[in-house]
Image (cartoon, rainbow, N blue to C red):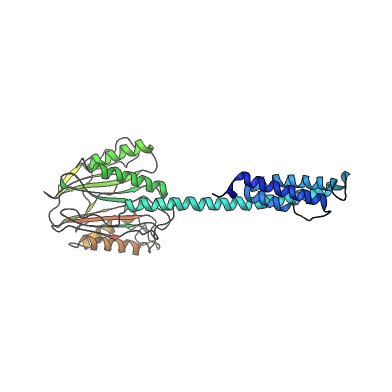
Length: 377
């Protein structure tokens, strides 16, 4: 910030201009509308009230100049001219000040949105990493596509847990914008941290819920999440769901049973009520985790009954891909959803597919770049 931006320097410049014009007026009978110069300066630098204030001072100095100037006009003769100039100066000061305030407001808004977008891009890189890390005993594929009309709070997590296990989670915040993305980032961070000391996905979700409420209290921006833990030694899985769609089995498209595992979303109550179920995945079996942006993708022409993609169609697509690798499954689901929605997603779409394999692989099928990321709503 240069010395020209110092308010006192600007005030001094306006006072100097007023003084110079008054002295000129005392020596020249009619120097012209020079008082508009300090009025414009005040409006530009200090806004509407600055412009109007200097307009009043300028009109008063004009009257003084008429009284003691070369023509020495006194009495009521100068009143109409002073009032007219007060009106002209006041309107000019107000208008220039209004324009200046609008400009400053727009610049401030642009800077705020730039800061939010930078922060959002950083958060988004965390919520949807460019490439998931390969995990022992699994083939993995992920996909994250942001909505076109604002940023929501979908996320996924693939990380190593205790005893060489793999923790896979997916979640969705009920809301849009930067705050939703921050809550998603917070929950994902807690889940990743808890993976270092527990193999119980229900406990992980409870810890995330407790931390979320402790951090920001209960909120309408609640978070649904599903979490599974895979042990490569015996190919067992443990899973728990907090108000989220349960994972579905590859090859037949049926959901994992969630009667005992489904709790309430995170961030609503002190306890989620999440229980943990246990099963196993034989070699070649797999799961698909997804957010509601998939099944709630709406057709522009109303196709599909209520226009939604729906759980049954997702199940049909997955079962039709029997035996295919996770990348192919993800690509097919993505393409079917985009075709159904006419290429316009009203909500974020997040997918994680896994298949038990002796040859670990991991690939991000779709990942938002900085240019594709929408501005905060």
